[in-house]
Length: 228
Image 1 (cartoon, rainbow, N blue to C red):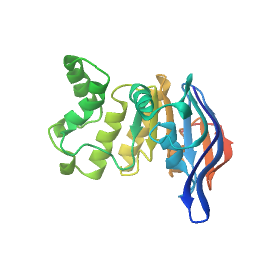
Image 2 (cartoon, rainbow, N blue to C red):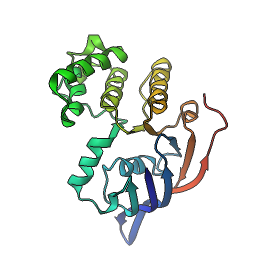
Image 3 (cartoon, rainbow, N blue to C red):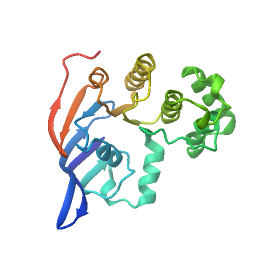
Image 4 (cartoon, one colour):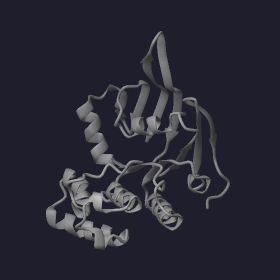
């Protein structure tokens, strides 16, 4: 489903270049659950942005199904992203001038889901995430944890093929964090491919494979014997 070959990412620096990712080779099968771990500055979020087709400025090859992402124009990448990818950002990225319900409706509208059907899906999602009482509020009226719940709900509402999660539980209490991780596991069991970045060792173990990054290099790919 996803294949990276010698993927690198660098920025110009006086007298040379600063490398964020170096010769990354990775294969992710459909239905996989992959955790990316590593210290701050190791390239985790950069790798996730490339996988999510938000960043097209990289070296090497990236294949998504039969699409050569490394050769696509920005609009083509954005179209692939909309059709296949749900992204849970560390900083929420909710639209401040839309209510909770409107934020959830937005990705469905991009996929041309009829309005009556969208309303039913949004109502179901509000109930599933226990945020029905927040549906008419704006992001600025929510706590950080509540904003993260809405961001997760928005990322998965269109049942994307791939869910990319950058520290999905970072702002949440442990009980909410477990709820999010259990939801990701359920989505995975239903066929979605999950790729998450986390510092939390308990949540990392939800992955079937753990990819270790250090200074932009993949140093180890670990397969935990058991899942939590």
